[in-house]
Image (spheres, rainbow, N blue to C red):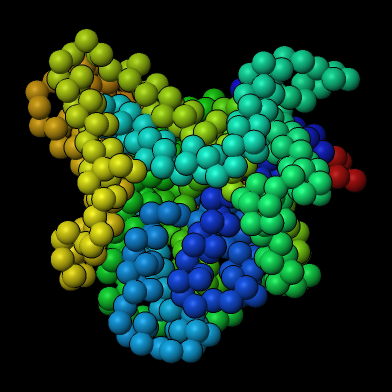
Length: 555
């Protein structure tokens, strides 16, 4: 496994791996506007603009997270956690009374924007004040394991059902990923293990080419979901070039009926992100993030949420579990790779025709990717059980109870999925409750966390003896933590790595670094101009000698 901050891969390799991350998050991200926009009254051109906007924001927010956030190689993308609240807004009688589709779309979009901005501000306060770290002091592997597992298990409804829409493409996509990532991963071509590095890209290329050939031969009827030209109207309706910008739909509208239920989506998104941080660190070979680093990541995500509201994407962004699975498949967890992917996302979103073309990928192919990758999230969650006593009846009950009921209540075939109306009523509080209890991750958390902290059990039994080492780590002096989590260039010294966020968990501020604040490595700047990165480190450590060396390197 290549960890987040070693010497980065070569630029060409980093760009290809970054493209793979883009293709992995493509289907889920483009699905959000394709689902939401028609319900808002949008036409094809407006939907294409929203698709461009959500990818543009995802790229910027990924750069923010990997630069000033938790620094882990996590992609940011549209969050399904906000969809229940979004549809609550769309269905509001005040907005539904607008007869003109264009006017209704713009009014609904601006109302959603206002709600997203408000919850982003809430999350910003939660993240950068360190409030969340108080909760993390009581979070053990007994809770983390079922919560992460529930993230993957909760996605079962969007996986194989979509494959069934086109068996030939869906199963071929699944088969090629398994073939390339598992059976051919050790095969080298000209000294490069191409199947190990690019299994998703190669699987998509092979399957899409196969589908295009059969489409050109008219093997499938015009309205068949297998056809690669089934979504060609998206391509036709998109302009060639377009740069999304704030307030492109007008001034956001702030309504309590909109932002109150959005708080439930925010809570679900935050809990999912916390699980993703630990999952990503595990898969990428990085040390587990401390509570302060987790809080810093949530604060950075909040900036991205606010940006999503300002630009207008019908949604807010969060950490993407899909791309964490891609890290496991490729064995490359480099931060540079994800940052290259973010740049690709931004560029492609501005060349609207390219984004529209990729958005025409048959849905069965996307679902084939999910079948291959989502199971890894479940496995990573369960791997946290290695730290606890699995022979303890206490732990067995809590973990089993949390996983089972997360699906029984909020899973694809659970109680909430079978409700045609909100079982909690029609008030704002009912909307929040509906959003919370529709999330398997939150149900797993609510089931495991209280019992884990009230049912008698030793710290060793609960796995807290390992967690204690993580939470009390000297983040400013441990080389491994500095290499992965320290802020880049001069930001480490300027903001002191946001060390104050560790206070609630430690009960004191972290120790000052003995040799001055030093930036972590493996950023895009380090890849493109190593001298710039080295100069940043010399500024942080305030060593004139290193600065002189930098001048020689850059000369």
